[in-house]
Amino acid sequence: MKVLGIESSCDETACAVVENGRHLLASEVASQIELHARYGGVVPEVASRQHLLAIIPTIRQAMDRALTGWPDLDAIAVTRGPGLAGSLLVGVSVAKALALAQGKPLIGINHLEAHIYANWLSADEPEFPLLCLVVSGGHTDLILMQGHGDYTLLGRTRDDAAGEAFDKAARILDLGYPGGPAIDQAACAGTPTLPLPRAWLPGSYDFSFSGLKTALYRLAEESNLANVNDAAASFQEAVVEVLVGKTLAAAREHQVRQILLSGGVAANHCLRTRLKQESPLPVLMPPPALCTDNAAMVAACGYYHLRRQALDSLDMDVIPDLKLITLENKS
Image (cartoon, rainbow, N blue to C red; front, side, top):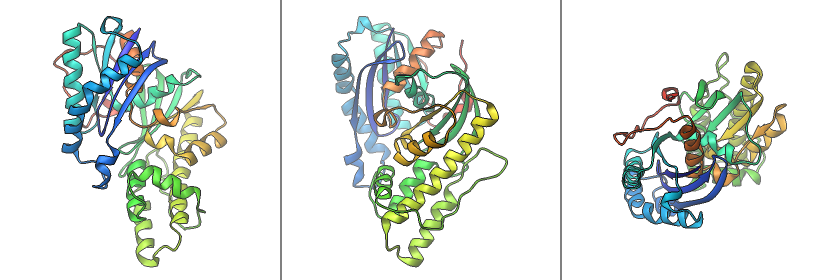
């Protein structure tokens, strides 16, 4: 079965075609990074207008590259939340129109769930039960996954998400936008020597990075950090140490078979390396290109919804603040 995936939750207009949930036939992404770089972050109105311009050409490119016509498709999957309302509306509106015009089933996908399913596009198929660490610009969640559509939220960030913390740290250190890759690159040339705090929050699997960001800001204010690379390496080390420590602790407690890493921050070299080195369990992670926002993960996730006939109607609406705990196990 072939599923067309559409993703427009933030500033990437993406479309992909995936076969049987695991075989990527084509993936196209129209990036807006250069457009928003001048503002130091995503401007929602600018993002939604750019989606309008890019979405139809991107869909055509993906379908042409996949050598797929409308009769070949079994369903259309689209991100319905969480994300920017205006951006989500562009993708969902186009998906609805295509589903109606072509007579295809419509599947609304949770963006965080889609990030998890990027792992099904890797060579090794995940084995349940799984522990999923989802780390992105807006989310840092630990999720126990017992089966397709069966999720238990174990912990989440109480303030800044890991990706958001990286963006703010990059701004403090004047490393540019986007912050995550900038911190990662600078840290490669630095040594983690600064005394930055770790918020372990004993007794929970929640995360907190706001205090860490404030500590870096105060150090920068007080000492005019002589070595930006060392500062970046120290900040990255503080984030990664907590992410890895809590993930491994949760994996031991819940006796999972594998650990899945996903989300934009999953492209961070230090996090990928440390988790693989320190975990006694197999760790699966998508290639970096499938960690950031893309439509391949949406299509892969859509396939497993389609198998369960977990479909949506044409009156489906976007939910900008959609949480994982609101995921419906539709049957």
